[in-house]
Image (tube, rainbow, N blue to C red):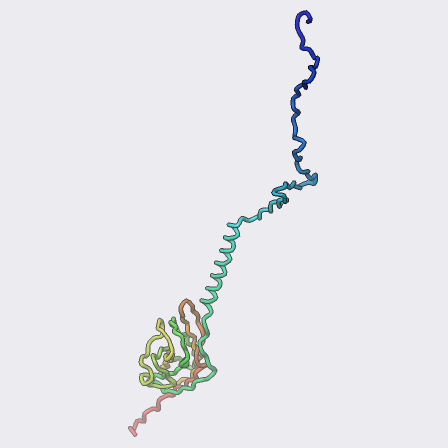
Amino acid sequence: MTEGGSTRGTTSVPGKRKAERPKRGRRPSEPGPPPVSRRPGARATAKTGGALSSPPLPRPSFSAKTWRYLALGVAVVLGIGWLVWYALTPDRLPTTTKTVNASGVVGQPLYIGMFAPTKDFDRTIRISGVRVHTTADVKLKVTPLLCRRGTVGVTTKPEQFCAELVNPEGQRFTAGDSIVVRVDSDVAALAVIDRIKIAYREDIRWDTQPAGYQQALVTVAGRPEATGDGQ
């Protein structure tokens, strides 16, 4: 004993161990963390089920949704391009290098066949108009007409060959039909009618194309004058 207080004895008791506070830290049996690479940008890999896990793949700069929209846009552009090409490139109309020679007289209409496709023409077109270019030494009138279910060479009586003669604008044209021109002149004339051009539509396609004979050489003769003595 000491005056003013007491102290615990430090003498150890035989057969007893002094209690010690456990030290903080990992147990000796626990494995330590994997070593970390000191290289810049390197990542540590952890053991999972006895195998090393793969590092995460880098994400693309564009999202998958953006790529889908881009592919859809390309497909739409290609589809529109093909549709425009298809609409502007119908099959060519039949042509020939042959020339038609036609003769008539003043004051009598002359009908000349300019386009008559063969029987294997298996198309149906809607005519928007027929263009005719004529070179002549005098003024004369040339009118394109549609001959229904018939063909004409050169004649002054087309009703013998055509079921109907109509203005071709806005009319359907198919196998068995033909295009003729009517020539009217009040004076003697020499004329050259070039190959006609037909503006037409076929389903969603349309175009203006040459068709038929290369040209027609037309001679319009004057009528002989009557003698004054009546002979």
